[in-house]
Image (cartoon, rainbow, N blue to C red):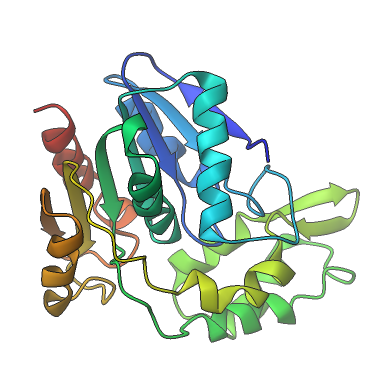
Length: 253
């Protein structure tokens, strides 16, 4: 599958993968700052953003989609960054196609399987009747009944767009993503990767716990873990300066 991407800057390629329910637009602000140092490529994974929808969805397929993009753009010595689900895609890519990469950055996701925890988000999105909603504020009011976090609501609302006059639609393939949720939350295959890797976690997030570190270091022996204090799962937006500082320190050394 051909993936949609945005590009800015020049130099060594730094490819950024969004998380579940996200798309490349989520990383635009970071890309502008990082484009002073790198050629930034923001990718929409399948069933997200402006990339095509497919009834088939798995980490293996997303990895092969990405490999196709790398081949098409003739990319090498890539710094690959992924957040949450995108981090799992990035780690699996490193396991399968290490020869394309120079460094790996994984943002607030571990190698383990995760329990289902998106029920309230899915319920909120299902509660929005896209046939009846005429203004975005109505959708936000509905989400507020299910999701306390204003940041999460705004993140989801970015996916709503005007498909035609008076008709909103989701940029994500909600039906397939919900169906594949168990696979999205599954563990990474157990395979060692010898690649300089940076894990960045939010202090207030429960995605990478202290007890997860040994397993991460077994699979990624040349790795370091940086904890951003006061930040949660969306560490890159909640503590942008600290996040970019850790990233640049790793990438530019």
